[in-house]
Length: 204
Image (cartoon, rainbow, N blue to C red; front, side, top):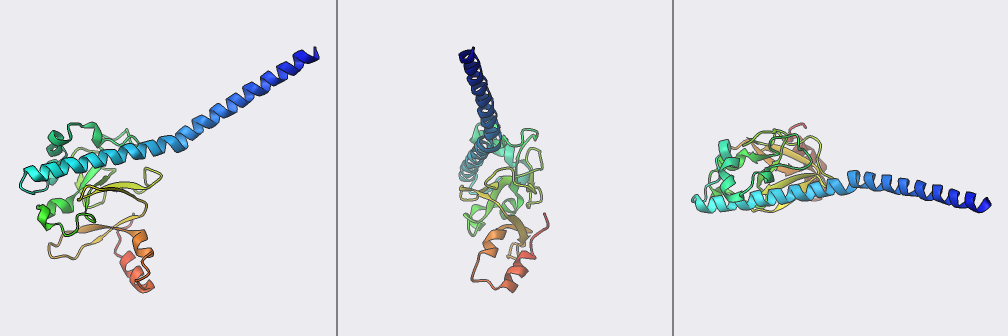
């Protein structure tokens, strides 16, 4: 009888541990693995959008896609509509927006620094061919690493702190993406200059 009770106790303990471990795995999947997987898929989407845009530019005499139909214009190059959907927001028709500044520049040759110029970014606009100067950026990042962006040279990066400032260049385009943390960490800037630059940012 004692042996039976001891075995029964061990069985109960074993089942309890299995339940606890199973629940832990489910929580880990939802809170750690799934968000990271979503971010990786989203970055892959933007990488392919960037590659498709570069192919478009080569075929169209170095002209950027038009803002009003940029997404449809890229479909022959991306060969897929699914890359315009981020798995973190399955409720949206489309999850990315085109930087309208790029359309304003019109030609690839007018981009001063392709590595610094935003091409396409995660957006809450939720519609096909969304295009703006950053007003539809998510106020809260969708991913653990931040908000995903593809730049005009094709590289993709997640940014945690985002802001747009007025851009006073000769083309008089409205907004340009800057990274808030880059300003805060720049030791070459005085505190007064940092406050001035941070003051240019649009409220989120």
